[in-house]
Image (cartoon, rainbow, N blue to C red; front, top):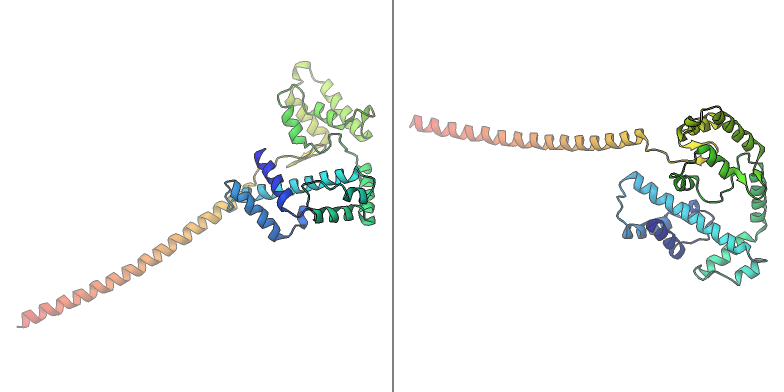
Amino acid sequence: MLYTTRVAWILKHHSDLSHATWHDVPTNEKDELVARVQVDFILDWTKKNHRLTVMKTFRKRFNAIRYELHKIYKTFENAEEALANRPSWVNPNVWVKLCGRWSSEEFKRLSEQNKCNREKQKMNHTVGRTSFLRLMELRSDTDSHLVDFFKDVRWSKKKGKFVTPLIEENYNEMARKLAKLEPKKHTKEAATTIFEEVLSHRSGYVRGLGEMVIPDSSRGCNDEVITELTTVAARHQEDVARHEKDAQYYKSQLDELRGDVKVQLLRKLSS
């Protein structure tokens, strides 16, 4: 919590929020923001997972802040009223750019298009911006299972029904499979198996739930190990070459010394 809160604060006070997305932020600006995080937290920037974690947090927080600002903008009747009621922590120039973008015909057209696309989705949910992982963590100590969870996040309390017919069909199939089991077999593991059978799944993604935690790639780990071993081997080869060179030097010095001694002995014998 402290880390994400700090990242959000840095973005609010030191980033140009007029960029449409985090992807559009120039590299030099991203580097400056990252440097501020490195001052506050102990990070090993040579490790890929540390770099990815920081950049992912920046991306999510940046887009979340933009989303919240747009919600504030929409509470006003028009752009002029929004301009006159700028949030105190937002840079005036940034707020002008944001209001200009959100009031443009191009943005309105894209918003309407996105709205139509969302209405066509067959697997809508009702939990807003709260991640499924967070909701599942909150329910981890309860007796509810994935089938219950699927219903909770796809059921519209306002309409009193599932958000789409396909979702209702999928839930009913899961419920029927559960009903065929003996009561003592109604475990979380059994519900998870049925959930996966009905919706299907792939690594890192569960249909109906979205992105999950993706384990570190074993290939990536192997690549890091290979790189490290290659570096160590190269260093040892350099050491061996240096020692061989030193050995050759000392051998030549020894041979020269032996030659001198031999000459001196011959002189003494001849005298």
